[in-house]
Length: 308
Image (cartoon, rainbow, N blue to C red):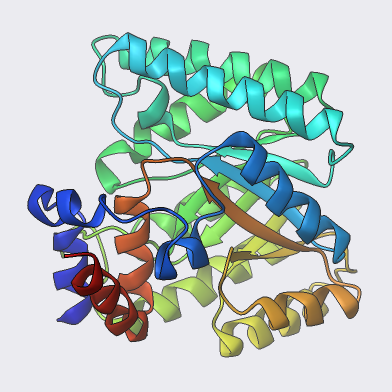
């Protein structure tokens, strides 16, 4: 119930207005968001890479409803990629892109998002790194996978994301688990209806294991996005059964979540990538993180109360 409430608050303009008056450097926000500027994101990336971690950075922003906003999002990614390359942080650092931020919701959104994503992929290749297309709510899944398929004709290194909470995802994993295919498996952080998604944590976790098994047994490159210790142990077991060596898959965790475990996995010889968000459109992202870890809610409420 608490998770559903927090996901509903992610769409509340009233709460967003209050929360958005908090500086990004304050309390809970700074824990999960690297900052508002490219320079902050690069600094956070450099610190993580210095600790032996890899990184994917995400310029926060969703649902661009006009071309100007989509163009600004693309420009932010181009700037970020150039800065990462100049700092010598590629290929350890790549970028994650939400297609809604680059025009997916516009009239002719498929072509707009594809063209904009292609520009980002071109810049990423020039910077000696890669792009992963983030997955959003279930209404965008087919569109995102269609853009992915077209991008991979020229940029086969482009990563995909799938969410174990969706009923369809096990089949998607089997389709995507081919040679050269990079696939991030996460649980999913969107409020989805029962007709398309599992509603209980147990069912989402069971789906995660089934999906992960399909990816580990396939010929692609699984990216295991979870903070759950039990699922991390299961991932290691499935990798062993599939006779996978470290470097043929990776673990991924969010910036600010279980940092010591991130370092432990890296020290053990595993590829460990940290998802680093930045920018001023952090509210929806933060609320979904709180929904995943409701124990952080009290900290967030105290921050709001202090600000108000």
